[in-house]
Length: 218
Image 1 (cartoon, rainbow, N blue to C red):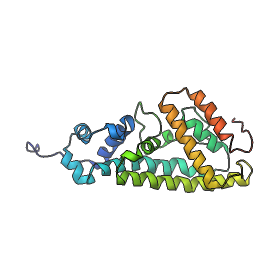
Image 2: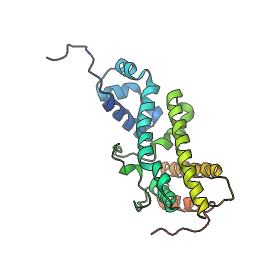
Image 3: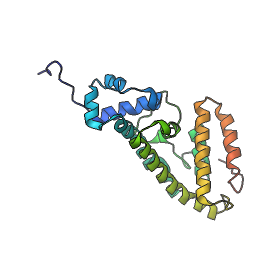
Image 4: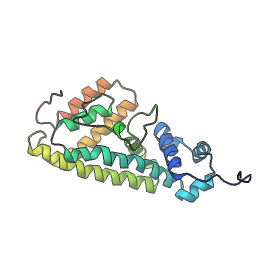
């Protein structure tokens, strides 16, 4: 039997998060309305509010889908790695230069998410750029992942300092902040459509300030 006219369609939470995830990544958090997501999902706005409490709740869940994939597929590589090429390949992969998966596997190799066709940059880094415009739940997710990433990177940085690959002239947390800022810079340059090999040259120069020696990738 067909639903009576006017009865709202049953909400598929997973499908809705996937739709929001793609829309927010492709267009930006503040360029997507709740009404447009409701139209794509063919559900009512009140149904979204009932499931996620508010628009911030949906944004948070969409971002969490991505940060969970980063935790499970990207940052944990640093815990296992004893090779400085993991860091370098991460940077190059981020700006679209294919890398040896022996050293680093980017988010596009994660099976838990489908990368939207036409997407640019890192969804998390794009969220950080507009953090000041976002609400509490989404901001908390940004901050929580940042702390998680920092903890895992610092373990890696200390290993690289101990084996002479990264300078000991700065504390590990200072080096992390430098790496994080350089990643954000590389992402911003890519979003502004700078040639990826020009970005690579800038990244190489930036990394040379913390690397103890020049690294040759093979």
